[in-house]
Image (cartoon, rainbow, N blue to C red; front, side, top):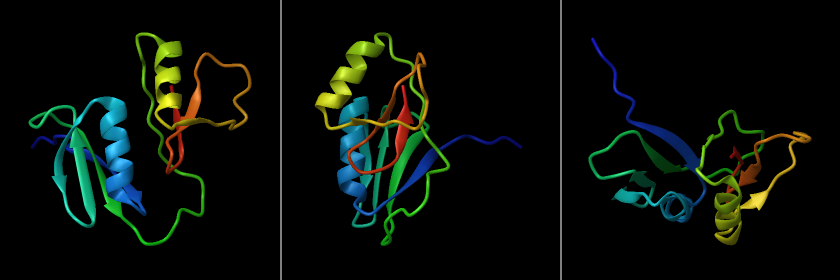
Length: 111
């Protein structure tokens, strides 16, 4: 028996807006859309993807999941994502080699 990692599910009040933001930020393609779901992948036939699924209630607690990325040029990628609508977040990290950003709609992500 084997398992293949298909996707990470991200709950969102507006899955299309959040999914489109991430598609543009990552340079990924949209593989499925509906009123309640927006799925993106690195390429149409490449896994895993991110699947943004509608929830009606806003998030009320700290997220249990964040995404870590390792860019070739951290400074350039942070600047690009900030220009794309991300924002810096202070989670009490102090002086670290990584940067914490939040997308325009949800929780914290580390770079």
